[in-house]
Image 1 (cartoon, rainbow, N blue to C red):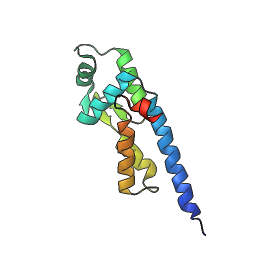
Image 2: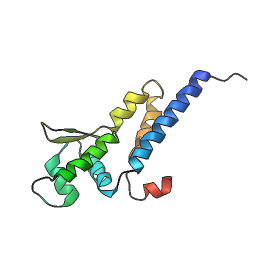
Image 3: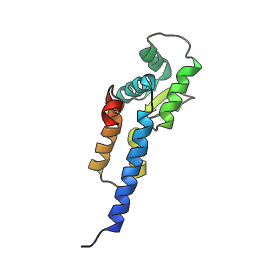
Image 4: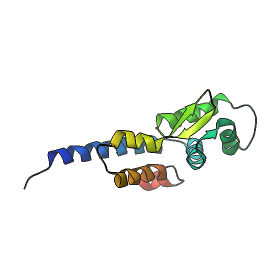
Length: 128
């Protein structure tokens, strides 16, 4: 029985990538998860609007809110463009960029949905 070594390596790379990405998402606290969900639904979104939706109040955006956005950037979920003040959903592009040669469109779509689903309440407990 012949083993397709190339496919075995691809599978290991895909599994490692998904495992690492999932761990970063699982490590997020409640507020960045809520922010990420808002960005996914409304991308791109202005930081002022995102702040209002996340914290329920208008006004000057405190540094700790930008820290939450930075955490989401570290998890490859969003990108913040300082000069426009826009936050955009980037998970899809990140997965495509990493796995374009390792997984077909359907498999990548499933991976994107799985990773995004980890943002939902209760997902951490269910997946650990």
